[in-house]
Amino acid sequence: MKLYNTLTRTRDDFVTHEPGKCRMYTCGPTVYHFAHIGNLRTYIMEDVLDKYLRYSGYDVTRCMNITDVGHLTSDADTGEDKMLKGAKREHKTVMEIARFYTDAFFADCAKLNIRKPEIVVPATSYVERFIRMIEVLVDKGYAYLSGGNVYFDTSKLDNYYVFGNQSAEDLAVGVREGVEADDAKRNAADFALWFTKSKFEDQELKWESPWGLGYPGWHIECSAIALENLGEYLDLHCGGVDNAFPHHTNEIAQSEAYVGHPWCSHWFHVLHLNTASGKMSKSSGEFLTLSLLEEKGYDPMVYRLFCLGSHYRKSLVFSWEGMDSTKTAYQKLVARIAALDPEDKTEADPSAVGELKARFAAAMDNDLNTALAVTALYDVLKAKIGDAAKLALIADFDTVLSLNLIPAAQKAREAAKQTEKQTENAAQDGLAVVCLTEGLDDSFTAEVEALIRERADAKKKKDFAEADKIRAHLSEMGVTLKDGKESVSWEKA
Ligand SMILES: [Zn+2]
Image 1 (cartoon, rainbow, N blue to C red):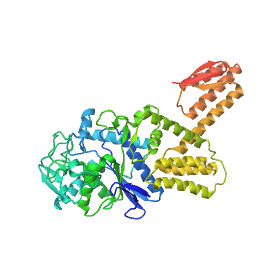
Image 2 (cartoon, rainbow, N blue to C red):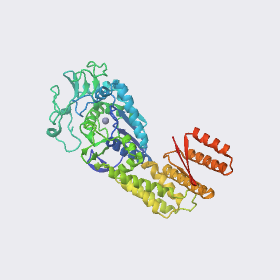
Image 3 (cartoon, protein in one colour):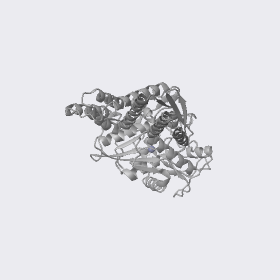
Image 4 (cartoon, rainbow, N blue to C red):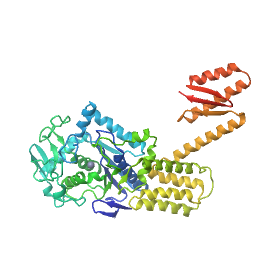
């Protein structure tokens, strides 16, 4: 598989330290607010990569952190504590906020079919390990105590700026606009590993450490959690492109200083989701959440398909028009799959099936070209291989794409059967039964309709007592009837 590597700035052959095994790390959310759909784009693309590696035969172990300890509003070491900001806003404790938004994050992930990594570590559960790692860095001479805080000394590394085309002048913390210089640092690019002195005296979570009561810096979190759970050689590290500098750059600095050799061989970064007015961001106030998309009538699968339709290394522009056309495309795709006959016994030509599978794999092997992989689904629908073979291939591709295609098609098939049955019944007794409430359960609808027909039969036989009894029963079920000429419409309260 060819996969772009931010470290080498080329599309590399993806090779792991131990053949067949992939140790994968993902930077998790800072749980002080809901994830916005731009954050979720990153997790969707990482999920596709994770699942495709498994599909290709890798034994993947994936680990993710949850940042539930003071992470500052800017990615530098200054700014306001995000967790504390969330807690103040909602009049809750920091840990209550963390728990609530961790659950909300995984609920969004579940709706988007994003698999939960096997190892999920809240930073607050690892503070002792962060302290141990910082102690080693101090012992090795890579970290120093100054002004009450422990800093990583970036001048001790030959190549600190590993990502992008940053130069020390352009990007060093302290010279960027809006970021304050910290006098305690020896070099502008140095970053804090442990704080005992910070601007905000009301920092809620603090721990004892050899340097005094304080709390860890953000970057140490990912290094310590990854090293502890995935070992000294990491195959794949993922995150949003925002994280490349300084977060990932600092992770590399401290991890390699700690283990004494190259640490992670492959870096996968997903680009931004933009709106017409610019980059989506939580700090700018208004942002789009998955719940908002649902309120507006978009199935989370529509957003997943919207993301898969574009390459992860390109910025994606979000628009409601884009969502509408994706919604139509998704519905049409599901309808075409629903039209396939699962009972079809046509024997499929193995070479034709193999060719379709190869097309899907070629798309994914080409730097995770998900748009082309989705096209491979349409190739399956057009192919002459019989419906059962098509369904099997679609189910196979969907273990990676995770668009719920087979269950959605099954549901559409059942709904069609239901309508067909209603039309048939209407033709038999000349009575049209119309349901005015949307979104009801199929079995409930069938039960109500059967009762309405029984009542109509009773009325025909002039058994009005029986007809009234049925009406009362329906009323208990929350169903109200409106009798028309040759039709009965009903609604559920
Ligand atoms: Zn991280």
